[in-house]
Length: 529
Image 1 (tube, rainbow, N blue to C red):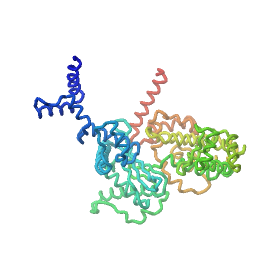
Image 2: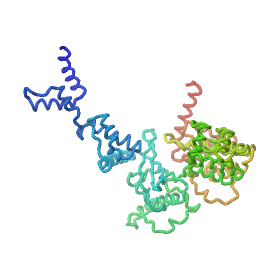
Image 3: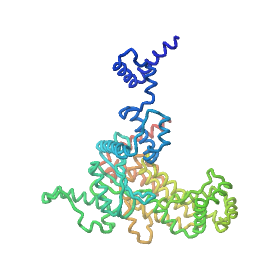
Image 4: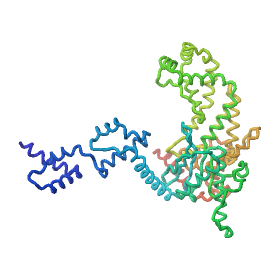
């Protein structure tokens, strides 16, 4: 009896403290009825258990927001899933009061509102920035639909920030004019025209022309605004010379404080491609490895036998991707970890005797993987998403140069490959070697397009000094005396007036940062933190 008396009190208190909205609804119900036969609280709760949430209910909004953000956006599920009977039944099992929005509501109402809110937040973030760097590229999906993506990177209150400014469909021809116009529209939309300091792209000719023309147009517009004789307020691109092939003279890529930089990972891929193009002795076994990989991925019968004998865990052979050279490396590296004797037996049992790997093939395979391993490690190192990667460019270039020069004395079957890799490295990154004062032996063939790669910027030399992970440790790979190394360090810091300050107007701040790092390093080494 006592329990029956206490239970309504406990329920009343629980609703009042934990379910404020339901309690308020009950109070309104009590005030509206005010009769002797009014409904009890317990029956009221039970009768309302199957009533759906209103659209303004916080619980309804919370689940809808989570459904759109977590499932449709993050998990890339189709919007039509909200209309699927089984999915609706699943949501009903989780919360019977929740009613999912229909596909049309998500498409034409919820997502546009979310896009507007997100855009406003990014614009507010860009307003807080003083300097912005952009990365842009054209991406094509499996259905050959092209998209142009532009990402902004900046430091705000000492913390690195990044934001996707635009990811829009880019149908039609990928001409320099259309690319330039699309990038300019995004820059104007987010009002970062005066804040953009660097733009990083790949080495495609249309992308190089687009950025060069965009910079020249901005420079012409700035000149026209300062010229009282011009009243049209802007420049045009009717001059046909804008779209002519960019030469070594006009590809400087620097107008005022803006610089166009080449993507280091893409340029490093071009170096490896140059090397693989001259590989002749390794063609037979590389062709065999490629065909074996194709059979594994295309023949269900062979794959079952392969997994039965070799094991399915950690023994797969990945497919290659034409746009990523390291996919070829990972495929070749996977063969090194396999038991070649067992693999050859599987090939024989499935009537693929022509693909058997000979002892010579295995020896060359291991040597090729060993030569390309530093390039694969460098590629992975520069693909960081949450960390700064420009600071590792100079250390990687010098380290690869030292490694390849040492490999020339120990190489077996791939002397031509090592020489080509070394020559291509020096040619494509000649700007960095020139900044460091390192004399390099250029290839005998005229390759003027190498001069179009944007690696003449001082930012590549300044970046390692500001990163405690690298600082000046890369100088150990510098081919010079201790006095020359010290002169380079002073030149970067701007410590001495006798040396040209790479930091220029930023030398003061750069010097302060470096001194803070030096003090921190001294404390760590002295007090053993």
